[in-house]
Structure formats: C-alpha cells, structure tokens
Length: 219
Image (cartoon, rainbow, N blue to C red; front, side, top):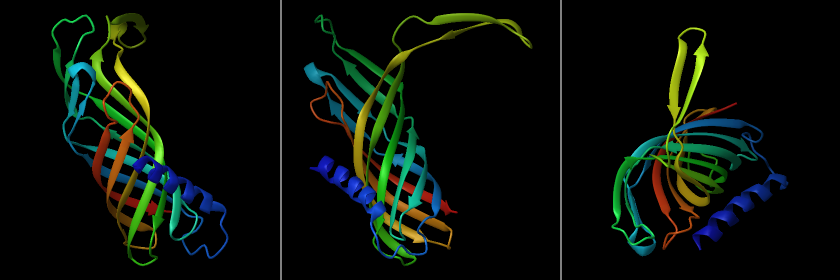
C-alpha cells in the first residue's frame, strides 16, 4: 500500500508539470538544499535464521528542486549515511553461523515530487519519490588486488585494492513535514521520510525511517 502511495504521489506531481493555471511567484525557480539526516535503527530477518541489525546514524543529504508552481516542485536528492551493523550469516553447507560487526556505507538517490499545501511562511508538505539504494558492507569479498606504479613525486609505490560485498536495489518512499520560508529565497524544512527497499533474500522488505532538517536556497 505504501509503495502504491509513494509512486502515485510522485507521478501525480510530475504530471502536474504541464497543468495550466496560476503558477505563483516561485514558479520557474530552482532550489538547492543541504540537510542533516538521522536514520533510525532497524532489524531485518533473512532466510534460514540470517539477520541484519542496523544502528542509528546521522548522515548528509543534498538536493535540487524545480518549482512548477508556488506549491509544487519536482527534483532529485542524494543521501549518504554510514551506520554500523551486526549481521548473522548462515552458510549453505550446514556449518555454524557467523556473526559480523562492521560499519557500512549507504547511498540513496531519489527522484521526488513535493507538494506544499500553503503559500504562507509556514506550510505543511508531503512528498513521494522513487530511485535506488546502494548498500556496501565494506567487508572484502576476496583477496586484495595489488597494483604498483611509478609516481613522479613519490617514486615507485604499491597499493592494495579490495572489492566488497555490496548491492544496489530499487527503492521508493514517502515523507511529510513543515516548511518555513524564512525569506523570499531561503527556507528551512523539518520532516520525516519512510523508505522501502526491494531486496531479495529477506522475509520482508527493509523499511528505513529517518528525520531530516534541511536548509534550502532558491535562485
């Protein structure tokens, strides 16, 4: 149900780009934003007793939006966070399970549609979007690759490179909050975002929740 809601809201906002009517004073402006994002801890159950526990963590978000009207904008944002995780891995050969604790890297890119209910200084808003989420365990999946080369400054140097267990999956979500238009070109937003990720091998889809405080500037 939430997936249908988020996708429907996103496409409703996109389809409104061509809608006629009063566009308002902010129409046609581009807004750049930066935000602090606090993701909540969560647990996910996999198959055969495997599991993944994510700790809470604060990360960063950067975005760009185009105002179709004073109330409606469409845009794209990227979110980066590095939560610690505890995982229980269950081998296929029947050997004992393995417990792992490490710090991961999560990156989400999302196309969004945002609707502000009012044109006043303070207004509630809703948003819906879809995109992808990249998860990197930062745990090596094999032996390192060692490369050596001549550096014009340091001379002959060698370094090792690791590939890691990672995955990229389709994701979608919805959000809501309050927007404060501090000035004609400056705004502050505080809101909640819920994100669902399409991942195979889990009993249920991961649902990631976060709070964010955002500062944006319009041109």
